[in-house]
Amino acid sequence: MEDTKSLCTCTPTTGAESCMLQGKCIDYCSSSSVISYLAAAQVMSTCDFGKANQCSGGLVCERFTSCIKLFCENEKGVVVETCSGLCQPTQRLMLSAAFSDSEDKVSWSQHIGYPHSIQDRSFLGSA
View 1 (cartoon, rainbow, N blue to C red):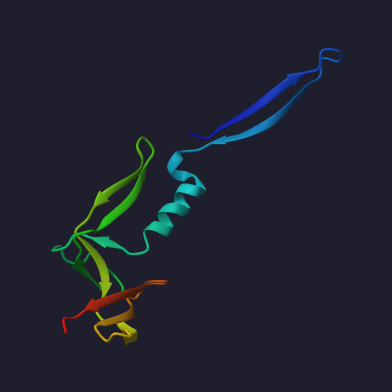
View 2 (cartoon, helix red, strand yellow; view 1 turned 120 degrees about the horizontal axis):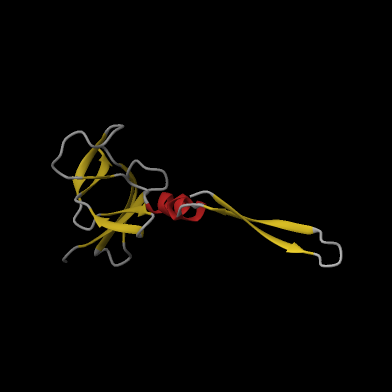
């Protein structure tokens, strides 16, 4: 779908024609904005929970009920599809943990093995 379009005009007094290149038509899914959007949205690799050997690099497939994956189809655009799992590291690194001032809540941060993937969690206990 690589179509180069140009806009041409003719000067009536001289008969000279001048043309300007308008650009190339590309598939929607090949546009840099769509590629960037999908790369930013897909920080973690998705997997089908229960199927073996879908994750690489020391990761395992863990069930996630709110898992979605994004991909692009030229006819439909960006497509959102549910998935049943995310590839997660077998070991997570605790970064910090702290009690709230009222001491009824614990908050913690953990690095889960992906660039820029720090999860912040809280637990509200009963006194």
